[in-house]
Image 1 (cartoon, rainbow, N blue to C red):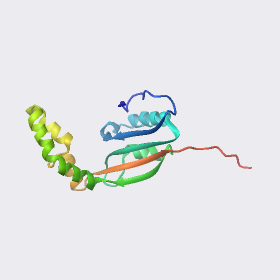
Image 2: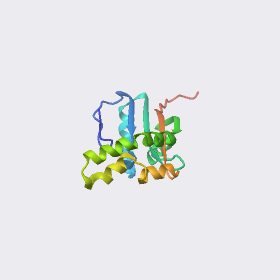
Image 3: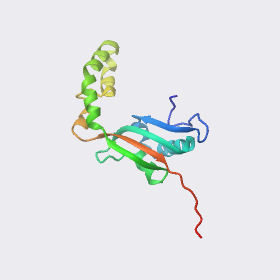
Image 4: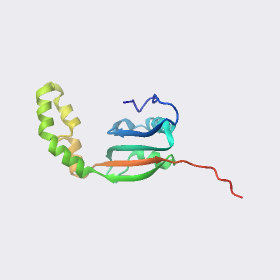
Length: 152
């Protein structure tokens, strides 16, 4: 199911083992949106649930969303891998077919938007990654299960 991460997720509490979020960095520019999303994934994930995320990050690998998830101890990073080289390679392989598709099926007035969205060479997104001004990361986070242990 595809859900809008800025709204209430249509799932019961603690009903999901995994939540997957790909390429949504732009919606988390506001801390309010980050807070709402973190509350929702925390609510729907089981106590040992995983949050899987891929997207653009700052050059140092930081992201408002990932930083918030770990700063408030809601989640623990299990794995964090810079996959920029792989993403650029895939974009290179697919660039001709994507450009052809855009030329054939997208109205001329909208083609530049779709070129950027497709990450074609020469666009800001592609150039930022190839010039190391931004990076693409894959992150696996596990919900932090806190247990109260009495000290005797």
